[in-house]
Length: 188
Figure: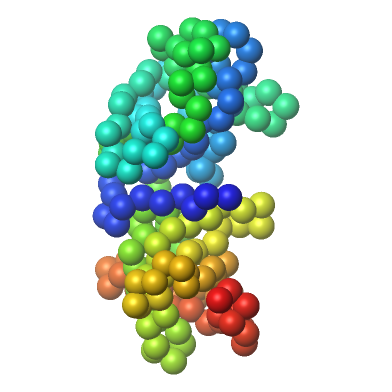
C-alpha cells in the first residue's frame, strides 16, 4: 500500500482515491480516506481532484452529482463524466474536500495533513525523526517516520494509536511516543 502523503502545511484534506470505473455511465469506485464518508461525499457538492503522480497540487474542481453505496463500496458520479473512458481517466486521482470544508474532530483526533512533518520524540526525549507519510491499513493508521538524517531508505513505521503515540502537540509540532522494546529494530 502506498503512503498517503501531502506536503507539510498542506491545507487540502484528502478524502479519497478513485479506483476503477463502475458500469458504463461514468461512475467510479472510490476508496474513502475519511471517517465521514456520508458527509464528505453527500451530493451535490464540489470536490477537488488531483491527477495521479501530481504532487504540485494542481487541483481541478469537479461537481459531484451522485454518491451511493453498492455492496459496502462507495460509488461516485461526477458531472461531465458520462462513459467508461471518461471514468477510466479519473482512475488513481486523489479526491480532496473543497477548501475550508473541515469537519470538527473529536478530542485526540487529527487530520493526516496536520501530522505530516511533525517531529517524533521518544519518551527519553531522543528525536526519532519526522512524520513523512501515513498508511491506512485494515488495522488502523500507521505513521511513516523518516530518521533525523533524512535517509528515507531507513524510514520506519509506528502504529498511530494512543498506546504508542501518547501525546500530540500540534502547536509545538511534536508527537511523543512510547514504543515497545524492539519495535525500531524490527522496522529497520
